Length: 282
Image: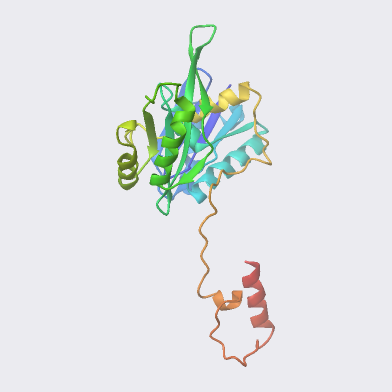
Protein backbone atom coordinates (compact mmCIF):
# COMPACT_ATOMS: atom_id res chain seq x y z
CA UNK A 1 0.00 0.00 0.00
CA UNK A 2 1.45 3.34 -1.08
CA UNK A 3 0.58 6.37 1.05
CA UNK A 4 1.05 10.04 0.21
CA UNK A 5 1.02 12.24 3.32
CA UNK A 6 0.67 16.06 3.30
CA UNK A 7 1.09 18.50 6.19
CA UNK A 8 1.18 22.28 5.76
CA UNK A 9 -0.41 23.17 9.09
CA UNK A 10 2.16 25.80 10.05
CA UNK A 11 5.17 27.56 8.55
CA UNK A 12 6.84 24.18 8.72
CA UNK A 13 5.63 21.75 6.05
CA UNK A 14 6.22 18.04 5.48
CA UNK A 15 5.50 15.62 2.67
CA UNK A 16 6.13 11.85 2.56
CA UNK A 17 5.67 8.89 0.25
CA UNK A 18 5.85 5.50 1.94
CA UNK A 19 4.51 1.97 2.19
CA UNK A 20 3.59 0.05 5.34
CA UNK A 21 7.22 -1.04 5.72
CA UNK A 22 9.39 1.45 3.85
CA UNK A 23 9.89 5.20 3.69
CA UNK A 24 10.46 5.99 0.02
CA UNK A 25 10.91 9.73 0.34
CA UNK A 26 10.23 12.65 2.67
CA UNK A 27 10.64 16.42 2.62
CA UNK A 28 10.36 18.56 5.74
CA UNK A 29 11.09 22.24 5.25
CA UNK A 30 10.36 25.80 6.35
CA UNK A 31 7.65 26.87 3.93
CA UNK A 32 6.84 30.26 5.46
CA UNK A 33 3.64 31.51 3.83
CA UNK A 34 4.32 29.82 0.48
CA UNK A 35 2.26 26.67 1.08
CA UNK A 36 0.24 26.85 -2.12
CA UNK A 37 3.29 27.77 -4.23
CA UNK A 38 5.58 24.97 -3.06
CA UNK A 39 3.39 21.98 -2.23
CA UNK A 40 2.41 20.78 -5.72
CA UNK A 41 5.97 21.17 -6.99
CA UNK A 42 7.23 19.03 -4.11
CA UNK A 43 4.59 16.36 -4.73
CA UNK A 44 5.65 16.11 -8.37
CA UNK A 45 9.31 15.93 -7.38
CA UNK A 46 8.93 13.29 -4.68
CA UNK A 47 6.89 10.95 -6.87
CA UNK A 48 9.43 11.27 -9.68
CA UNK A 49 12.39 10.70 -7.36
CA UNK A 50 10.71 7.59 -5.92
CA UNK A 51 10.01 6.21 -9.42
CA UNK A 52 6.26 6.36 -8.76
CA UNK A 53 3.32 8.03 -10.43
CA UNK A 54 0.19 9.56 -8.98
CA UNK A 55 -1.78 6.53 -10.17
CA UNK A 56 0.33 4.31 -7.88
CA UNK A 57 -0.96 6.06 -4.73
CA UNK A 58 -3.42 3.98 -2.68
CA UNK A 59 -4.21 6.34 0.22
CA UNK A 60 -3.93 10.11 0.69
CA UNK A 61 -3.25 11.23 4.27
CA UNK A 62 -3.55 14.85 5.37
CA UNK A 63 -3.02 16.91 8.52
CA UNK A 64 -6.29 18.67 9.40
CA UNK A 65 -5.05 21.19 11.96
CA UNK A 66 -5.30 23.14 14.14
CA UNK A 67 -2.73 25.53 12.78
CA UNK A 68 -2.47 28.33 10.25
CA UNK A 69 -5.90 29.05 8.76
CA UNK A 70 -4.56 29.19 5.20
CA UNK A 71 -1.86 26.57 5.68
CA UNK A 72 -4.27 23.88 6.86
CA UNK A 73 -6.61 24.55 3.95
CA UNK A 74 -3.82 24.25 1.35
CA UNK A 75 -2.93 20.67 2.32
CA UNK A 76 -6.56 19.66 2.84
CA UNK A 77 -7.82 21.05 -0.48
CA UNK A 78 -4.87 19.48 -2.31
CA UNK A 79 -5.41 16.11 -0.63
CA UNK A 80 -9.14 16.16 -1.39
CA UNK A 81 -8.52 17.07 -5.03
CA UNK A 82 -6.00 14.23 -5.41
CA UNK A 83 -8.23 11.69 -3.65
CA UNK A 84 -11.17 12.70 -5.84
CA UNK A 85 -9.19 12.61 -9.07
CA UNK A 86 -7.51 9.29 -8.27
CA UNK A 87 -10.64 7.80 -6.67
CA UNK A 88 -8.60 6.80 -3.62
CA UNK A 89 -9.39 6.87 0.14
CA UNK A 90 -8.51 9.94 2.19
CA UNK A 91 -7.64 9.99 5.89
CA UNK A 92 -7.43 13.15 8.00
CA UNK A 93 -5.29 13.28 11.16
CA UNK A 94 -5.09 16.15 13.64
CA UNK A 95 -1.78 18.02 13.61
CA UNK A 96 -1.65 17.69 17.41
CA UNK A 97 -1.94 13.90 17.07
CA UNK A 98 1.06 13.90 14.73
CA UNK A 99 3.17 15.92 17.16
CA UNK A 100 2.34 13.54 20.01
CA UNK A 101 2.94 10.38 17.94
CA UNK A 102 6.52 11.43 17.27
CA UNK A 103 7.17 11.14 21.02
CA UNK A 104 5.34 7.81 21.46
CA UNK A 105 8.31 6.23 23.25
CA UNK A 106 7.81 8.57 26.22
CA UNK A 107 6.44 6.46 29.10
CA UNK A 108 4.26 9.19 30.61
CA UNK A 109 1.71 11.77 29.45
CA UNK A 110 2.43 13.89 26.38
CA UNK A 111 1.01 17.35 25.74
CA UNK A 112 1.38 18.45 22.13
CA UNK A 113 1.27 22.21 21.59
CA UNK A 114 1.08 24.75 18.76
CA UNK A 115 1.09 28.52 18.93
CA UNK A 116 -2.39 29.91 18.26
CA UNK A 117 -1.59 33.62 18.36
CA UNK A 118 -3.15 36.17 20.74
CA UNK A 119 -0.96 34.69 23.53
CA UNK A 120 -2.86 31.39 23.34
CA UNK A 121 -1.92 27.80 22.58
CA UNK A 122 -3.56 24.86 20.83
CA UNK A 123 -2.99 21.72 22.87
CA UNK A 124 -4.08 18.13 23.49
CA UNK A 125 -2.90 15.42 25.89
CA UNK A 126 -2.09 11.80 25.11
CA UNK A 127 -0.55 8.61 26.34
CA UNK A 128 0.55 5.55 24.38
CA UNK A 129 -0.02 1.86 25.07
CA UNK A 130 2.72 -0.47 23.87
CA UNK A 131 1.86 -3.89 22.44
CA UNK A 132 3.51 -6.42 20.10
CA UNK A 133 2.36 -7.92 16.85
CA UNK A 134 2.65 -11.60 15.89
CA UNK A 135 6.08 -10.99 14.36
CA UNK A 136 7.51 -9.37 17.48
CA UNK A 137 7.21 -5.80 16.23
CA UNK A 138 6.32 -3.03 18.66
CA UNK A 139 2.96 -1.32 18.15
CA UNK A 140 2.09 1.94 19.89
CA UNK A 141 -1.58 2.75 20.30
CA UNK A 142 -2.55 6.34 21.02
CA UNK A 143 -5.00 7.22 23.79
CA UNK A 144 -6.20 10.82 23.75
CA UNK A 145 -6.71 12.05 27.29
CA UNK A 146 -8.18 15.48 26.61
CA UNK A 147 -10.23 17.35 24.06
CA UNK A 148 -8.45 19.65 21.63
CA UNK A 149 -7.86 22.77 23.69
CA UNK A 150 -7.36 26.49 23.20
CA UNK A 151 -5.81 28.01 26.32
CA UNK A 152 -3.36 30.62 27.50
CA UNK A 153 -0.10 29.09 28.84
CA UNK A 154 -1.22 29.72 32.44
CA UNK A 155 -4.66 28.18 31.93
CA UNK A 156 -3.14 25.20 30.10
CA UNK A 157 -0.69 24.61 32.97
CA UNK A 158 -3.57 24.82 35.46
CA UNK A 159 -5.58 22.37 33.37
CA UNK A 160 -2.72 19.85 33.32
CA UNK A 161 -2.29 20.15 37.09
CA UNK A 162 -6.00 19.63 37.67
CA UNK A 163 -6.37 16.66 35.32
CA UNK A 164 -3.13 14.82 36.18
CA UNK A 165 -4.51 13.31 39.36
CA UNK A 166 -7.66 12.16 37.56
CA UNK A 167 -5.67 10.58 34.75
CA UNK A 168 -2.79 9.06 36.70
CA UNK A 169 -3.31 9.43 40.46
CA UNK A 170 -3.41 6.30 42.62
CA UNK A 171 -5.14 6.06 46.02
CA UNK A 172 -2.70 6.93 48.78
CA UNK A 173 -0.05 8.15 46.32
CA UNK A 174 0.50 11.73 45.22
CA UNK A 175 3.49 11.15 42.92
CA UNK A 176 2.47 11.97 39.35
CA UNK A 177 4.43 11.36 36.13
CA UNK A 178 6.25 14.09 34.25
CA UNK A 179 4.45 15.73 31.35
CA UNK A 180 6.40 15.84 28.11
CA UNK A 181 5.58 19.14 26.35
CA UNK A 182 6.33 19.14 22.63
CA UNK A 183 5.52 21.06 19.47
CA UNK A 184 6.10 24.53 18.10
CA UNK A 185 6.41 26.51 21.34
CA UNK A 186 7.97 29.95 21.34
CA UNK A 187 10.31 31.02 24.17
CA UNK A 188 7.69 33.20 25.91
CA UNK A 189 5.11 30.39 26.01
CA UNK A 190 7.71 27.89 27.15
CA UNK A 191 8.83 30.19 29.96
CA UNK A 192 5.22 30.75 31.08
CA UNK A 193 4.44 27.01 31.07
CA UNK A 194 7.57 26.16 33.02
CA UNK A 195 6.92 28.91 35.55
CA UNK A 196 3.61 27.25 36.47
CA UNK A 197 4.65 23.59 36.18
CA UNK A 198 8.31 23.63 37.21
CA UNK A 199 9.63 20.12 37.85
CA UNK A 200 6.40 18.49 36.65
CA UNK A 201 7.25 18.98 32.97
CA UNK A 202 10.07 18.60 30.48
CA UNK A 203 10.32 20.01 26.96
CA UNK A 204 11.34 18.57 23.61
CA UNK A 205 13.46 21.01 21.62
CA UNK A 206 12.13 22.43 18.37
CA UNK A 207 14.30 20.25 16.11
CA UNK A 208 13.16 17.01 17.78
CA UNK A 209 9.56 18.23 17.71
CA UNK A 210 9.55 19.05 13.98
CA UNK A 211 6.60 17.28 12.36
CA UNK A 212 7.33 14.51 9.87
CA UNK A 213 4.77 13.44 7.30
CA UNK A 214 5.92 9.81 7.58
CA UNK A 215 4.45 9.79 11.11
CA UNK A 216 1.22 11.18 9.68
CA UNK A 217 1.25 8.34 7.12
CA UNK A 218 1.60 5.68 9.84
CA UNK A 219 -1.28 7.16 11.85
CA UNK A 220 -3.40 7.18 8.71
CA UNK A 221 -2.43 3.56 8.01
CA UNK A 222 -3.72 2.54 11.45
CA UNK A 223 -7.02 4.25 10.69
CA UNK A 224 -7.29 2.47 7.34
CA UNK A 225 -6.68 -0.88 9.02
CA UNK A 226 -9.34 -0.01 11.61
CA UNK A 227 -11.80 0.86 8.83
CA UNK A 228 -11.82 4.56 9.71
CA UNK A 229 -11.35 6.23 6.35
CA UNK A 230 -12.86 9.70 6.03
CA UNK A 231 -15.69 10.85 3.82
CA UNK A 232 -14.13 12.96 1.10
CA UNK A 233 -17.09 15.36 0.99
CA UNK A 234 -17.33 15.80 4.78
CA UNK A 235 -13.68 16.08 5.81
CA UNK A 236 -13.05 19.59 7.14
CA UNK A 237 -10.19 21.47 8.86
CA UNK A 238 -10.02 21.30 12.64
CA UNK A 239 -10.39 24.94 13.68
CA UNK A 240 -10.62 25.71 17.39
CA UNK A 241 -11.17 29.40 16.76
CA UNK A 242 -12.69 31.43 13.96
CA UNK A 243 -10.10 33.25 11.82
CA UNK A 244 -9.44 36.93 12.35
CA UNK A 245 -11.27 38.94 9.69
CA UNK A 246 -10.84 42.67 9.33
CA UNK A 247 -13.06 45.09 7.45
CA UNK A 248 -11.54 47.31 4.81
CA UNK A 249 -11.75 50.95 5.85
CA UNK A 250 -12.15 51.83 2.17
CA UNK A 251 -15.31 49.70 1.91
CA UNK A 252 -16.62 50.45 5.40
CA UNK A 253 -19.13 53.10 4.21
CA UNK A 254 -20.47 50.59 1.66
CA UNK A 255 -20.92 47.95 4.36
CA UNK A 256 -23.06 50.10 6.60
CA UNK A 257 -20.30 51.63 8.70
CA UNK A 258 -19.53 55.28 9.27
CA UNK A 259 -19.88 57.21 6.04
CA UNK A 260 -18.23 60.42 4.94
CA UNK A 261 -21.21 61.35 2.78
CA UNK A 262 -23.24 64.44 3.64
CA UNK A 263 -26.37 63.62 5.63
CA UNK A 264 -28.69 64.64 2.76
CA UNK A 265 -26.72 62.76 0.11
CA UNK A 266 -28.35 59.89 -1.77
CA UNK A 267 -26.78 57.49 -4.29
CA UNK A 268 -26.20 59.21 -7.61
CA UNK A 269 -27.26 56.33 -9.82
CA UNK A 270 -27.01 52.69 -10.77
CA UNK A 271 -23.21 52.69 -10.78
CA UNK A 272 -22.92 53.56 -7.10
CA UNK A 273 -25.77 51.23 -6.15
CA UNK A 274 -24.03 48.33 -7.91
CA UNK A 275 -20.82 49.06 -6.00
CA UNK A 276 -22.72 48.96 -2.72
CA UNK A 277 -24.42 45.69 -3.60
CA UNK A 278 -21.12 44.21 -4.71
CA UNK A 279 -19.47 45.17 -1.43
CA UNK A 280 -22.24 43.54 0.51
CA UNK A 281 -21.93 40.35 -1.54
CA UNK A 282 -18.19 40.16 -1.02
